[in-house]
Image 1 (cartoon, one colour):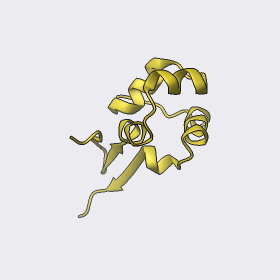
Image 2: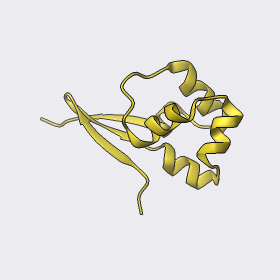
Image 3: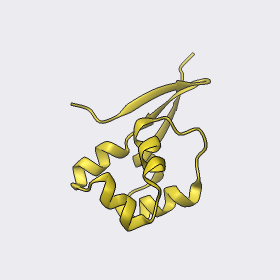
Image 4: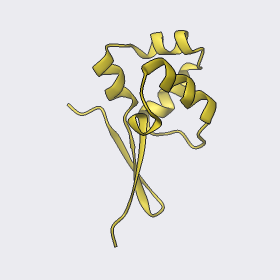
Length: 81
């Protein structure tokens, strides 16, 4: 089962892949929340693709903790014409 949520926004598609990264690294959302001091609701919104504003500082904390890049968590692909 894929843990990637895709959302079409504007001229492209965002892929929210936090759940997949967490599953691969065997880290729970609760552990991520505690270890990065990030509100659980924010982590849930990133994981489910319901986030409306991206806080670069939150993403950098998560990426540092997970030893990944931002595109490992959220990716954008422009639609092909």
